[in-house]
Length: 236
Image (tube, rainbow, N blue to C red; front, side):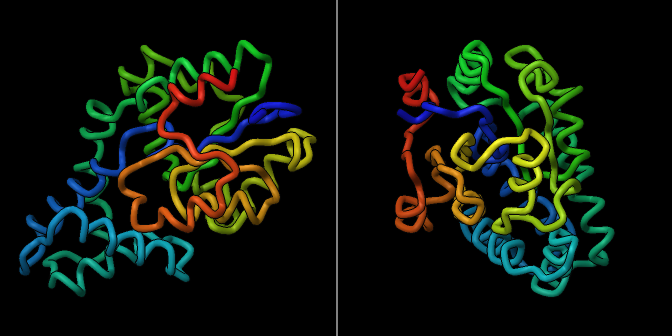
């Protein structure tokens, strides 16, 4: 059974618990259309480009590296830091008013809590975004407030190295005094599944259409493959 012997369940946010990846594609298209001097591509291309830059960035601030790419590739009129600032200014409205849990995710979180499990978030989302989710987003506050659901919520600001490096998972295991066998990670992306695998922790992959390009490798790394949280509820 998926939860047998588990004490700590770790969740990614964007694309896993939250239906957000498509929103970021829309935000980036708006950035390119507004500040670029070359036409914006389709949403799928935007995501592919962003994933490639973020996953391969050597910069400790990978989203600055991404904005440097946007400036160079689309001949943007702003420098990388200004593009970064504009990106999150536009994002604030999206994150406050449009982001929501994936179907049945709140019910699944509450069922895990009722079972006595500890819940944590390990996300590459920046801390300011998570603060919006925690304090301003009415959908999340009404359905399953972060402060009630999770023991800790770690953003990319809290990790020495971001996924696919397992540093944040190793930190969580140390802080909760648990072994890899006592943990379970929910992810949607390849880098997340790779981080779970590197930490020696079982990984349940929740389907997200924006990870379809990596589906074969995701399926290979996943210990559990779930269409949605309604299916996950059947394990409780």
